[in-house]
Amino acid sequence: MLKRKLGLAVAAILCVGLMTSCININDNRGNGGDNEVVNGIDYTDYSKSTYSIKVYNESSKNVVCFQNTPREANLISGVKAGATVGLKKNSLFSATHDFILFVVSEEDYLANKDDLSKLDNNPFASIYAYYNAESAEATANMVYRISKNMGGEYYILINNNTNYNVELRQNGLYGESLAFAGHNTVQTKINMIEGDYYIYPVFRKYSKKYGEIITTFPKYTKDGKDYPVAIGFSLDNETFSHEFNVSKWFDAAAMNATEAPSTAYVAIHNGNTGTGASLYKGGTAEAATTSTGGKMINTGKTLIFEVPMVDLGNHNYSSKVTVSGWEIGTPFGTERASLESIEVEAGKMYYIEIEGSTYVDMTASWKIIDGEPVAEQTHFEDEALTEFK
Picture 1: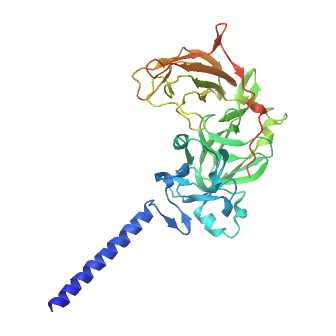
Picture 2 (picture 1 turned 90 degrees about the vertical axis):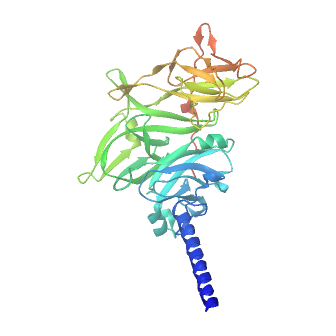
Picture 3 (picture 1 turned 135 degrees about the vertical axis):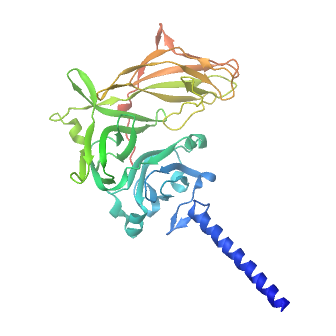
């Protein structure tokens, strides 16, 4: 009898152990565990080790991410609704490059797995992204967001048979990115939730010359004033869709828009022989970040920072802005080198030189000739676009 009781007790303990083990595995898989695969989709958060880029899925749907086009060969990994994860780093991320983060819903992926080309013109979300193979720190500073406005029963349709890569931003030139359509693409359909939208289109491309992502925008002139193209519309039960035709923005019969720079640029060279340095704006504790995620300017290196223009209201933006309160220093330095205030103009490049031998004797100054800051036209509009394949 005693042996039988002991046997039952041991069996009970083993059952509890097995149940606990199963519960732990399920909990791990359901909460972004190290090896989470659901319906054959890898939802692992790779940011705990080696990853390609970080993505925040603000939408209410689980999604699957591809590079440029939805093909099995271009598959990266998935992101659950509401999660922020590091996507898998595979052979697609062997070199520095910009690309389209092509996102599809889990349902669409599973329904079209045998022929993913059916999703070519209907992404859940489409985002202009950049991978920096040279700097893990820069990659960590960038998080790409899938908007909460995605995945509704209404939709926008983008026809872009121009030579521009178009990004649609909400509520301003520097607002949230809602969608992206590469040049010479048509009938890109993106489902969105009900709501009122005010969209500002911008053009984006990677400058191989400067190693930064460049942003310009379509501008038209009315009564002697310059305005960005801006489109307001609602998506609701009366208006189920809205179409964007990029070529119409440049049609003389419509707006007669021209490409215009959205920011000024500042190239900061670190000639300090003893330490790397960062840019701090307006006394902030957090270092400024470049368009590709750079913060630390290593000795002998140069990083380029954008200076946005000022929103003047009534959909009008300034062409010049005063830079003030800029400092150069290090996180551990008790003092920072202060820079003089200067006025900068959109589309022009300005220069700062850092000097010294340690963080203690660090100095920084604008490049000045004949009492004026050196300002050179960037001519970014002349650079070739990336071919997304």
